[in-house]
Image (cartoon, helix red, strand yellow):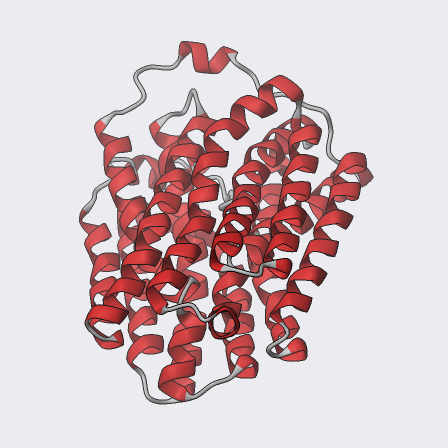
Length: 389
């Protein structure tokens, strides 16, 4: 039992550092970074997209690495890559240096996910695996929650903030070396699996890509939006990030929501909430509406990630790790494309136009049907409450 607790705590911390700090915190500090390095909005968007591109590059190979060298080695590597990337951000003297560091930091998230899935399968008894996965999933929200107070305390000192983040990643590398087992994935089930790109998976790719693109309106530009529209400084942006992270804990209930509504209706409900959140933060003129939008965004995004995870696993029951990879890769590709496009729209048109179009992107993802809703609703076993790690 103690081994399971240590693994859960380490997994929570690793996901918090890689997702909350190395990937999503960049949008929180983007206004200060742009001001210090004199970056236009379009360039800032391109660099923000690099974090998601790094995720895409890493997750493609992470599952294979886990099978070959084991979960422990890949988990430690994820923490070290996060530390190196965030240290690079802290020291960045130019846009090119910053872009390379953001890309490297983003790679840590892709490396962190598969080894933790393999570790849970190896260490935790089957009936407790869903609970452990839910705990580890909450690390994303935990990291976002913690990055908010860092912004509140350090204000415009974004270099110092990233140095602190880098030190926390080094600590997690040490914990992972002791607490994560050297488990490897299994190739047996993959060998028996059928064709990869079924209609169900193709629809998942489209839905996750559109959702991922829409989410960059706040992940990459939320701090900048409230700074321009409401005049909030680092303190206000930090508060928004705390609200997003705290509300994201609700995403642990993705499996229960699917069991009640099915994949399709759960997806549409959360996409509607995501679109409303983008509109509230991006077009609202009252602080209370911005914070309400932040809460909606956190809950909707984390829940949607869980929904797409379940969708991917249901589409490839003999290759669950591959199903997970397809879902998260679709989200990350959408984010890679969405961040620079949002920045360009802000430069060419206006913030209102960019926000409105990206809210519509979220709604458009609801057109895709999974064809697994009825199966998931009628079979609770098929609805694992596994989070988006």
